[in-house]
Picture 1 (cartoon, rainbow, N blue to C red):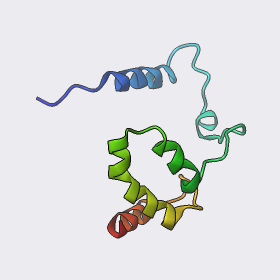
Picture 2 (tube, rainbow, N blue to C red):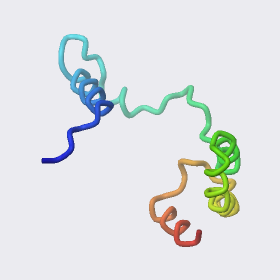
Picture 3 (cartoon, rainbow, N blue to C red):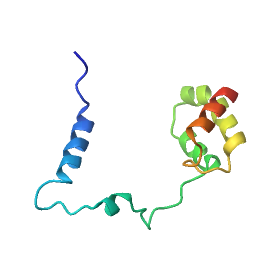
Length: 95
């Protein structure tokens, strides 16, 4: 017997189900696919890695710092949403 779905997923499924049923269903495909106009810009790796590094324990920082450093060296000026899956695979091989 497989694992039951996680509770967080249950909530999502319920929300998704409610989005297309009942009298209050007012979402259209355009609503779901339109880019929000008030979204802040996605940070670069150089901007975001220090933010993450400041939130982790010293042990985690020691373990991940070399990888984060290489990531910033390679992709520092790129936004977090830019790399493709194949580029991530190439970076993993490099690191």
